[in-house]
Image (cartoon, rainbow over all chains, first blue to last red):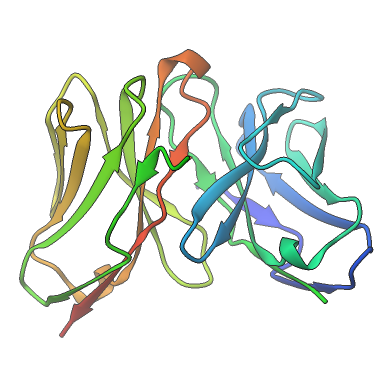
Length: 113
Length: 114
């Protein structure tokens, strides 16, 4: 079974703090993704990576950065957290190119006060 | 600009009846479509997909229909069961990006009433 794990289920941070969200997958997938889920807006892609050290902006990259130093690990960084970044963050991975399904982690509920 | 739209935020259906979840898209480049199911406090899980070369794909109780001319797809669940109660996301991708990037809809919350 593919497993995608996220470092925290719940996180509370203060405005202005630097926040790291970690994601690890154990199936040697090339592609990794970060989404945020908000009521009425569905899942929106923040960043994705198709290879180590490679990254592509998604639909809402502003205020975020990412890091992929190892194939299995993809980190989302909020350089200076703001209240409008309070959300559910979901990491996913998929294999190569082609019509391959994405496998999701359980999500991190981030609250920025 | 929402390229994948699910206009019904919620749907209630009696157990045993058919559930029909709808999805519209605007990008004519999309040629592969997926449905994901999400339970509370869990990540979405893949349910079923369809390529644009088909107009129907079936997997057990789940069938997805694609109407390319109308840019519309639907997910049918027959018969509906209480365990189907979840949020369903429609998603779409295209070959220009190797199908790696997927655009999700806003989701429809399905409640199956026992």
